[in-house]
Image (spheres, rainbow, N blue to C red):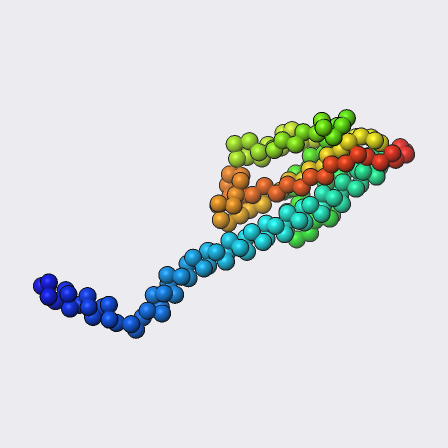
Length: 175
């Protein structure tokens, strides 16, 4: 093909406007879909975080008022109470991790993250609801799956949702 033929073919290609809408749509569709998906994923994560926060507040009240202590609940029984207040988004029995610790003062509370090298470290999680007048911290964790890896903070494409309630137990009567 000569230079003249190539030049004529290029001019014809540039002048042809029949498929410009399809090309423009093709160029904009992928970024639009990715942005829409990221917005939807972010909204779901915020909603799931709020559900976990509500469960933390509801279950912390059971310790705050002494119900968990006076009824002698184990960690599994307390977790069941947490799971009863979570609906829909979570696989509570196998996915939610509970850490309940008591402290002498609010300043003594250990607020460190349980994430080590991109993995959730559950070995230091305990269930110690304390007694009347103790400072207690209830933390709930859930590794929430994300589909866009730039949102994940755990390895394997998970975002760690955490909810914390810290309070001083009421002076309830021991039974």
